[in-house]
Length: 630
Image 1 (cartoon, rainbow, N blue to C red):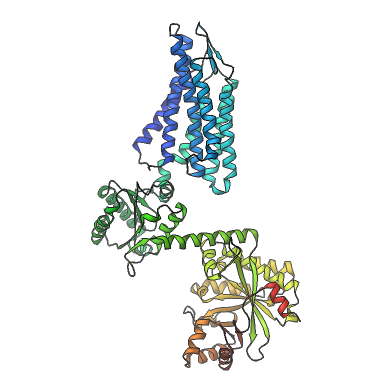
Image 2 (cartoon, rainbow, N blue to C red):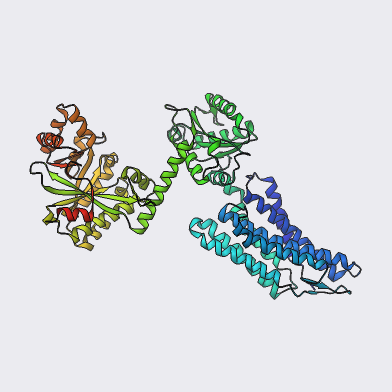
């Protein structure tokens, strides 16, 4: 009556997964525990499925009460397996399985109801019927099993799609896949009831889950043999401050330089030695390696922190000897998470740990606690990052302009284009805060290009010559100069608005001159397209006069700190430098002009243009046009 062909292979594969689960290192997290429940419940379901089918088919003398009880247990396991997959999906999506009122209604009530109906089959025929002769048939409420199954799958797929932007492709696609496979299994069970096919489709779903979420290599860092960054992220999401109050990290000082000194191969061997040392010396701790010489240890006993630091410090005072008899001398510094902040947002905590480890410096502080101030700073940076990404995606970066004044006539001659971004409270974020973040997350390219286009649009829409404007400066980030297609992209924008390149001067900071060859080649290429360049923030120490002379600048802007220092204590350095720059054929702009006395001083030493709050703060594009349009 029933086909058992797939049962043995299914049990062999499930048993293999169970063996791997208990023999490979695992994090104590709900994700892994829920997968274990799936394996155990699925194994029991297969046994009872086969046992109930074989009993009804081959054995005639089994008491009806036993048949009824065994089939009730099977259907209870069938529904429990269904719920296990739902819980696993819920953990992937929300990282939380606590039952809120909404989840009680969505998940728990239908589950309780169907279990009550199944249990009632001990007394009345609801899900299935067994006659006095041992003949098995469906009960009047049998289809509720499938309705419940399709309901849970539909909820899981709906929530997965709803949260798709919060999930990576490596999470979104597998969750959709194994839920669709389960749905196919239920459909096949309806179409071919005599074939035990549901277990086969469940097995396929388990394989998808294992490959996508449970494979130990996904959480293991090969060089050190420790858990990796992804594992730490999952661990922090579920960590209980009472169970794991100890989070201690250390970083190898000057790790990048050491890889150059000792070679990549020897450094990797050193990491392996460190990983082995941590496992052997602290077997009760969970070790994580986060790349770039950064380690984190998580434990249950907070009072052991100082002793652990002492052991590690003493070990690093001795060299790490590789199998090639090379002694590696390494220096480490520590950070520790204060227990009171473990209840903070776990994403913020994860970022705070990574950031602090990257910033540790034994020359200034050998041991640093991560406290609420660090959490607030990281949270602010994350909010700024979100605002930057949102502004770039929506093209809502605002164009502000600050006048550049002729030093002699005190009339408007030019302007500098400045980007402004609002936060979620509609407040402006200071540029020194959002510009570095935009550079780190790669958004600076889009931001800079949008600002260039908004400047072109302003020139197109307003009569800038009537305002007295000869040009507008647009800032370029050093990262933008890495783009080989920068000339083509900017030229296309100029053509779109029919703007002459002479109307826009591109400002480059001194920092850009670190990679001088790249800078020079890019500038010469763009000069052929008609672009003109201004050296911004001169005086911060990167550039020199010889290098400036090799680049096609037309103007040099003195950094405001440079200007203020001269005003406070006058000497011949700045006047001589200004005259030298002018003799090279460049004009000079003084930034940070806050009063008339400072303006007169800069004019007297030879500066051609002035910029600062003395004349105007940065104005929105519309305010600027209203103020300066005659």
